[in-house]
Amino acid sequence: SIGFLRLRHLPEAFSEGIGAFFDHHWNLQRGSPSQDWQILAQLPPGIQGTIFRFMHTDAFSTISFFGDRKRDFAFWAFLLRNCKIETFTEGDHIVGLGDEERRLYILKSGKIKEIDGQLTVLGGHRDPKFFRRPYHWGEGVLIKVATGKKRHSKVLTKASSKVEVFVLDIEDIENLISQDEQIRDNVTNYIYEETQLYVAEKFRAVSAKLCKLAVVKAQRDFREAQLHTDKRIRPRAEGRLR
Image (cartoon, rainbow, N blue to C red; front, side, top):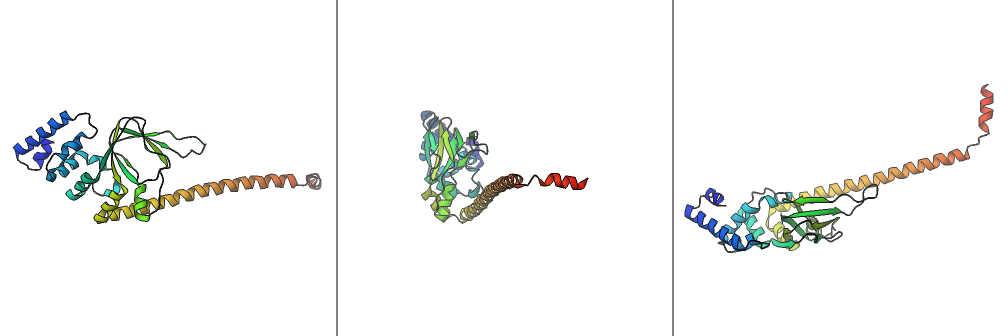
């Protein structure tokens, strides 16, 4: 972090002092679930957002509707003020299957496991998926903010180790969208793309079902036609051919 402060053209003595301060408190609070958060709180407000961005830019890099991750200071200051940190131990449920999506989760540390609640074509369960930072989930909160319609989680999200997550509640997302025009436009585009994918998925599902029904009906009609065929016609037809 001292190298970063030097790149910001801050005085050498100040940069080294900040580095020593950070290292000292990091060692004192090691093992605390949010030690970096507590250290940041003790720094001057003007530098908190800058250090927070330097430490966690990658964690937020997967959120497309936030736009360019190298956003201005106000954006990172907003995240610093409003992001909450929640800690989970291995096996804890973070989001349950069918839960309403009212929060955006950003993985800070650890590993999570997602178990898809939908069955495969053969009626079995899909293999769980594992994720590490950078990863986020809970985009359904955007649907709620933009349209008022609820969206429920289709996967069960569990902690696969000790996990820390940044959390933005629905009220935080509403405030961010109302304050930032670029993010508001990005969210609109995101919802449009999600709607298109949803419609396409439903169309494929209905088409597959209709095709299956059509095949079953064709097979049934064919069998019924065979049963009603007068087999006595065949010998007379063969006799006339001789």
